[in-house]
Amino acid sequence: MKKRKFFYFTTRDFKGVQRYLEELAAQGWELMELDRFLTGRFEETRRTELSYYVDLVPYRESDEEKRDYLRLCEDAGWELVGVMNGMRIFKSMPCRHPVPVQTDGEIEAGRFRRYNRQRLVWGAVSLLLVLVLSFLPALAMYGPAWLAEGVAETVQDGWYQSWMVSVLLVAFPLLLAGFALRLIDLAAVTVWDRRHLRRTGRLPAIPRWLMGVHSGGSLAWLLFWVVLFLSVGLDGVGDGFDGLFRIGLMLLIWCGVLLYQALLLDEEKGYTPGQKKGMLKVAGGCVLCVIVLCLLAWLGPWHSYQTSDWTGDGAANPSWQLEVREEPIVMGSDLGLTLDTYLTRYENGGSIFALWWSYEEHGWEDGFLTTLSYRCLNEGVARYVTGRLAEQTEAGLRLNDILAQPVLELEAVAGTGLDECWYGVGEDERGVYSTLILRQGSRTALVSAPMELLDHLDTVRQELGL
Image: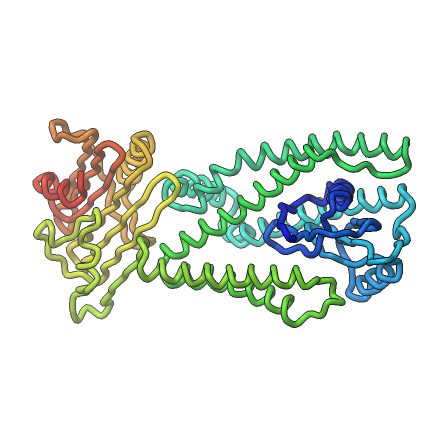
């Protein structure tokens, strides 16, 4: 008889894992293999001499040191079952009475403390390196004030526009709480370890309930990274081919590493058959994610189109306008506006808090038309987005680094049947331009065009679904 059991524990609990396996052995279950899907495969056994030994994988270990250590354990009567979360799990070979590999509790405790310190230091160094590489070029070019302003603006607008930013902001308080609990737990368990070591000369086995708490926290951390990675993928699909290429390349590189480990490395490297099968499953999952992202980019709800004619020989008349006409956007043709366009662009995307649509038509001499439409999670989010659109408009609506609308002063328009309606109109050398900002319930939108939009309010509302 076979069964699979949940088997995902943290390095901190390696002594508790050993006790847990020996309890299952006493019930007649033998661990046969581990995979990378949080489970272990067990089979019924009649072995009465079955025992287990769990040791930590050194943070830095050469291939030669690994081979020597595994050979030492094999000579002592221990068979490697698998490696999980920095722990090597051994079981006694049939008809053997294995010799303990580690007999000095003080040495074992010292190795455990060094291992934890190394993980903490290298984790902090890795995080610092990522931050430095991410922000150092901008810091060197523009200075700390510009960088701080850019981060603040990203947070202000990104939380309702970007899947990644919204996931980070939602999860950040949870991560801080988890980090604080982990520090408290580490301090409490360290004191307990030292007291137990003085009394018995050995490290203690963690209680099962505390092992469950540690496993839950570790899985929550793992889930956070999976969700964050998926959110980056969703943003990448929304960015079109370039974003999809970046996220797809990352997945394929990871897939290649796993395939290399599973198919080309021999078992002397420390990978058991169960782990290699797990690696193949994860690699298959990576390929499946790439396929799903490609299908989303092709058939899914997020699209990015752009048609341009920079020569001035003819207008940019994109065929995809028919495809996106039913979306909550306003086109020049809806308003009877004819622009000598050189660029037409459409994008849509979202976050945890809102879905958004963006459409632009840029004319050579007669200005531009733009639509920004949001379908928000609730009215509170919609009111915030409306306020941000008004702030940006009054500061000078900017479409890119070159083209910007002059500053407009917005005024509230009453009697429109909308929860909010703001309108601003002005004039420059190109003629009249105006901006409408509308909100109805949890939907809000901005439309800007080289014409008096208030005269076309009913048309705008109809096209936006307000």
